[in-house]
Length: 462
Ligand SMILES: Cc1ncc(COP(=O)(O)O)c(C=O)c1O
Image (cartoon, rainbow, N blue to C red; front, side):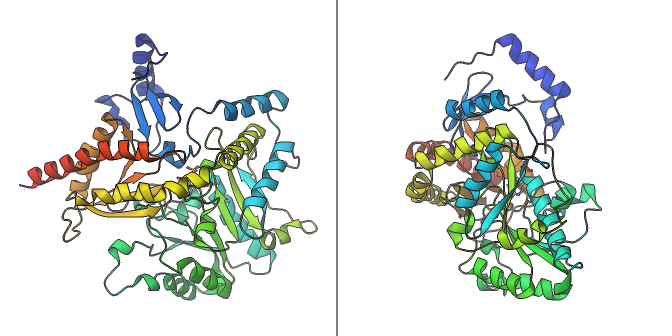
């Protein structure tokens, strides 16, 4: 166990202060009346340490963010150097060297003619911006009624009111309704639980049918992730993206690839669009763009989409003060250097099969129903009965995930995500520098905990 500089007195003070003042996101705060707030104090490579000096394998890259791993002094230094040179200047009417250099570098890496970069401060802002950009694009090109956005059920696209209208998770939407109008949803690519009579090859056709139903003259954009996070790493069936692209072209609808998670090596390529070989009109990105050493997001738009905004008196009537922040841009450039110079994409490609094999090896555990995903982005779906793939009830899922799995995995030193926004899944998404040693550690913790979880659930049901 590593030591930590935090003293005992500071520790309890931090716990008290956290309980009293910190409002944690998507968190049942009352749970911390009975248990400690997990306070992570430092990180190194694939590991983080809590205030007690306990080490955890960060099997979630701190929420799909820290692609190059924790504790990179060189990346931190790039931010510090930039802060000394120019701590801040905005991208509203002005530019600064780092945002220009970063935009050019991203354009170079992005697929096809995605050459214009609109920075944001994070993922929801990127999605919000892409939705607004689609609407204004259609107004500028003579289609003012095109305002609706088609997304997929159970997909997460962020929390601001516009992005939330694309998010397809009922429980996240209802507390805030009415949302921005025009968010529509079609089935996702959950091929593990295809509805009766539906084949994987049919799934893209739902997009066409929905556009027809709404009236093509009212639909602005389709937004989807290369691999859908919500519901647990749904991969696209063969030919899915190519068909969605055809449909968008047929109806003059913009295709947004939401790569807030899937870009920057997560799937072993710079972008998910590379992995599945399609050409979006826009990519939304955040998280791994800086490996989260500083907050940043971006919309990467094609020349065709950007063109009407570049003419005459036109402008995109939208912006955020901190978007393209020079410190974040400098950090992003240093992060891209690491990915490029240290073979990070190659590491994912070279080890993806070993990662998958380790997860597949867990299929002998009775509650493991499915293993799916791509690159370093995988999920295990937990089922009541492996032979019938019977689902848990909501109450059982709550007992399984919140009552046992989340806490026990953390207690044993593994940070991963136990998620029940769809059927219950464990998601694993380690830093892209992880390899066989970390996979072995994940298995050593996960296997006995999943076995015990199954035993407990059976005992409760008896
Ligand atoms: C696909 C996708 N889009 C958008 C977002 C929102 O990003 P942020 O939390 O940075 O606002 C997320 C966050 O996880 C995401 O996974």
